[in-house]
Image 1 (cartoon, rainbow, N blue to C red):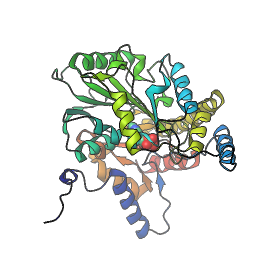
Image 2: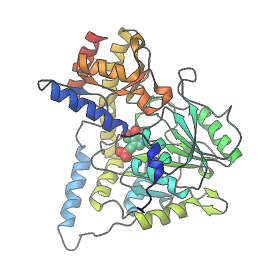
Image 3: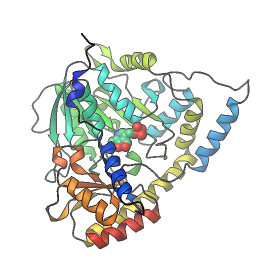
Image 4: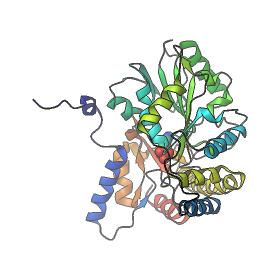
Length: 393
Ligand code: PLP
């Protein structure tokens, strides 16, 4: 008799969405060795780290070279200077947090995937379409999943009005990946009051908050009462170009208590056991990115990518292709033209324009017939992609 495996993995799709995209692109390149494929698919940044961050990386590296300033294991939940920098960042949005409510990590992806562990067998409410990690990690741990549809009719911002009044773990992401939709404060208030009324917990992903322009909340804690019902997960990946550097955090407010248990304590216990902290050098870089000079540079990165978004938007407008996003979000979410489904439109663009995007159906059933483009390419690649799209659409 052999050992038992986690059979829940049988219920997960055979490959992660971006692995399948990578496979199709590799196959195309092998068949077309002279091709020049432009990727507007996976949401990876292209601009280098900013000067303030680079200076911090160098100086922290130098500290590691001297006996007096060398550091070993970092504190599991983050160095005080990094947690303080995050607290100051929230203060700019009028949100008051205490450093011990912040848990630094190597990525929002890890935290979103791992958070499942501290909950028991609850109903999990996931928007469709969704960032695949949220769905897959719940499938892999055998959770009961319900969907709430994000559709053109509700502007891709589903609301709780029609939901049954029962406790759930609710995943939310604003600005949204993949749809680019952003919740207003009024809308978030309704979600918070639903969660409080039903004793649900919201897991709020604010990884794209730096892209917000206008009067939208950057954090769910801008809504009164959210601290007693919401966990927030954020990242410097898209704010500061840290996709390869790796730095994120989870906020577990002290008021978040379920059946007398403070979730922050459970998360602290989990992290202390299974995570050994983010390296000193990277935490110095993160604190530098979050400093006033660092944030000014980050705003330049964001505006560069948002200019790309407007270059891509103008093609879609010109061609009369319905889309949303591209404002307060680096993603454009478009309706595939001419009745294409998501994967056939992917193949059409790959074969005819050598432009790679992400099929909407990879984010959930409601994404079928939609397609996501990112504005994280270089200006040159984005302009070239725009002119190819103009030609083939
Ligand atoms: N959350 C969302 C919605 C994302 O789109 C991404 C990355 O694409 C992440 C989290 C992961 O961020 P990180 O690079 O910090 O793991």
